[in-house]
Length: 275
Length: 322
Image (cartoon, rainbow over all chains, first blue to last red; front, side, top):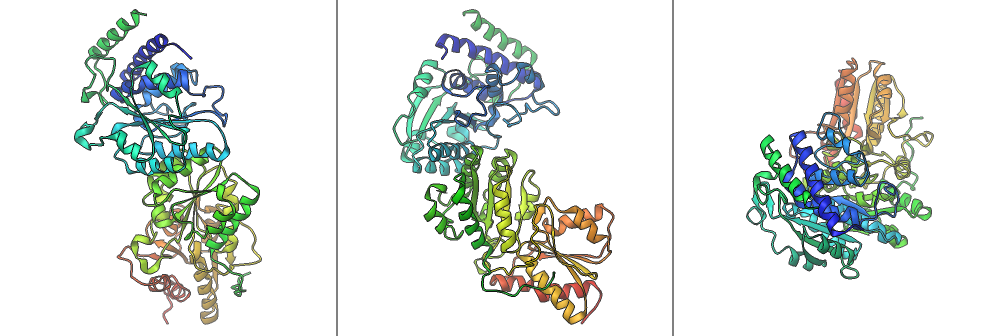
């Protein structure tokens, strides 16, 4: 368990690395990685019973990233947690590298190959159900983008999760309210997300997805209600942490220019200097 | 070797054998899990559900979820059979099979029941004439169509023990035993059911039986000697056996309850052509058209996937007209 201050510092370092690798690869999903990285920081540092040492343990907690395109955040956090050397990420998106634009199990620490949207929740339901069938106590966390909610498979899985009373399952929605074509409200309005999931039998919490204490407390209080699957709607800011990227659609998969990259580094270095 | 086994009264549908094999396996292996999408009845799985309720997961009519849930279960070490009609499973849930099962290498056994035109007059929504084609093009999944009860039992038992994905499809009609003396079965290895020097019939799944009927008819009516192969594994294909039989120079006919596009026939054709074999060659299957309406038997007869139809195609290919 690391402190809020340490998480704040780590999250700034994660952001620096995310931008470094995206800048170097000239590819990546910048905005979404910056919106979800604080959630990953809390999960991997304080919540998940998973590490480089116990990754083959059948009783480990699982993290399955449904919004696979925010892979840079996942890779940076896994590297920090010792799953592989940070320098491996220098090959991001290069010929024959396993560090590609979506998670694959070729990378140590990745549970499932994802990237096509609407897949993480059904797989997580199956994984959580296996724990129930076997009387095991591990939990399954899955991170969805708000833009992937119209995928019908999510709602099929949402039904199954409550049918089987999977209170060991926690779905987190990275609710940054932007997707590639515009706002989620304009593209396909899924509001009210909470009421929809509640009516499907889930227990729902709204959180500030950049507040480390709130995220910690929320994940530690799982299950929110016995016998009900858990949904955390994490209100986030796409491009969080870089002034000119925040809430700007162009940074969905925008790659910074040399000047933009320098500005972003300066902003993060300035913030880090405060620690 | 070679004569059609007389129906003994003990022959069953491959579907029944699938169900009884699963029950047999589940008796001693608690890791066996069956996932269904309101398909326990059509999958003959009600006895399984009654005997092993803790090993049956029902997800309702939701095929994409069926495969995703199956992949998650399989990722934890469970031996998962995901069972649903082939038509829905391999179309609606194709992306889940491609990504969650094959690409992620979660060892789900995807079981396509009532395959081909088993549903007959229910129409094209319920036919699976594309499943070999689409799954041949998906990396890391073995594609199997057992011909008879023996092959079905072997395929299910062996697949249960494999740490990799499988697609296994069969129909629901009673299938006679092809050859009681031939008890070899290995994925990726075709079974020679009958040997003859004039023509080679390579069939898969429940199309092997009419091929064998054709061979008998050809012998009795025209003294034409046919080799009959059950090519139960469509991918990986038994190239060794193909090369061996093609070397004879005899005409080759493939037979399948599937579109003539992308299935067993084209798989054989591409291998043979690339390997320099130029045998006369014909693919018997369902043509690319609005499928004729009727029962399964009527549809198969219409397209020549019958003993008589295959025999006629052989004589045509041999250049003999009646």
